[in-house]
Image (cartoon, rainbow, N blue to C red; front, side, top):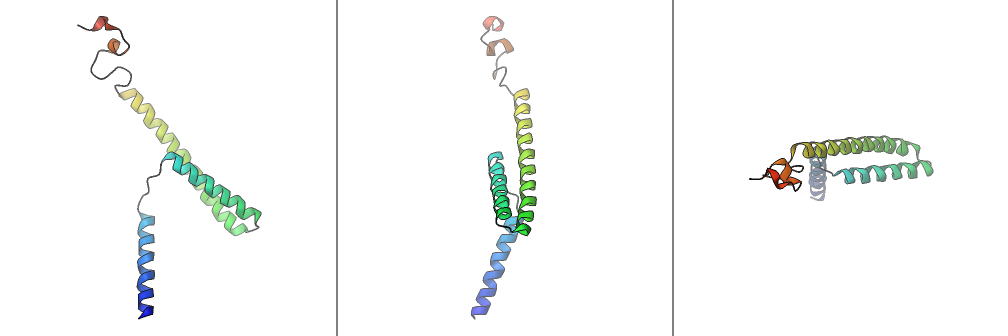
Length: 108
């Protein structure tokens, strides 16, 4: 009975971990940077403790994390530029262009 319970527990945990790995995660740019920093620190630690195989795997993971961080940072920058170009941020919400800057001569 205990073997059956253990096997169902192992199957359940492995299923949950597999599904959580397959689902997309939505991390902010700061979260991606923190992940890259932690992986880089772990890589350095493994090199210093002479665990080269672990260090190589962590080094590849940290390189991928830095790439993801850079891509997310560029995407965020493009989104902010698009928002500035297309929004009412520059001209106000429902007013002529001059009214947003305090020029009331265009207002009737």
